[in-house]
Amino acid sequence: MPVFTKMSLKYTYKWPESGATEITSSDDDDMIDIKNGYHVLNFINVFFAQKGLTSIDTFYKLEYMLNERMPVTMETRKEMTTWVLTVWNRIFYT
Image (cartoon, rainbow, N blue to C red; front, side, top):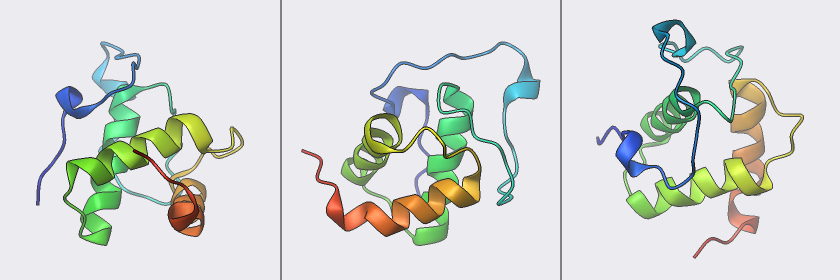
C-alpha cells in the first residue's frame, strides 16, 4: 500500500519545522489542521490505509475535497472521515 509524501500534494501547506506539529497517531479525536501539510498527509495516508485505497487520482480527489469543499467546522479526524464518507459520491473531481 503506497504512502504518499509531500511531493504528492497539489495544494500549498505550511510545514512547521518542529516535529511536534506532526501527527503520528490515527485517533478519532486527533485535531487536524487543514493548513498543516503534516496533518493533511497523515489524514490522507491513514484514510487510504483504512479504506484500502491506492490511486493517486483518488488521493487528488480527497485532497481537493479537504481544501475546497469541506466545511470549515470540521476539526477532528472522526468529523472529517464521516464527512468524506458521506459526500464522496456527490463530489466530482477531474
